Image 1 (cartoon, one colour):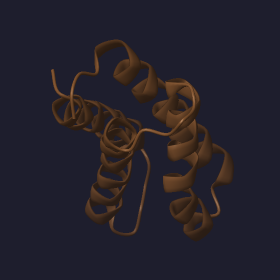
Image 2: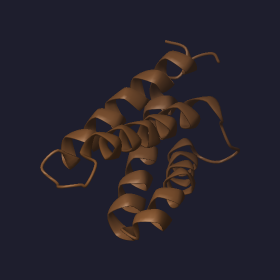
Image 3: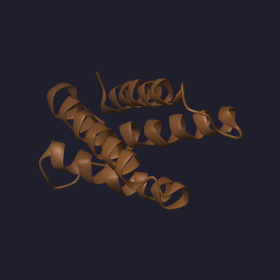
Image 4: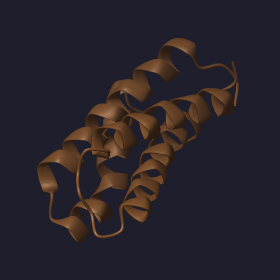
Length: 104
């Protein structure tokens, strides 16, 4: 599996998990909130796979997850859940890339 394929797969899984966790919540515009959450988390999976850093993969993933989650956390002021899930998802994507990642 190439890193691009793995990034897309990680992004879809992480995005779907984020949407699933948000389904019971109420939002003024639920469709927009769910789409934004999906694409935010999809981007983390993709970037973790395609933008390696000179760090252990799990640490690079957690770092990308935090960085890419920061704008959403700033806007919503839901710091802990957004940054926590971003870091955890990035870490898991980093581990997946380290284990399954092939050529770019």
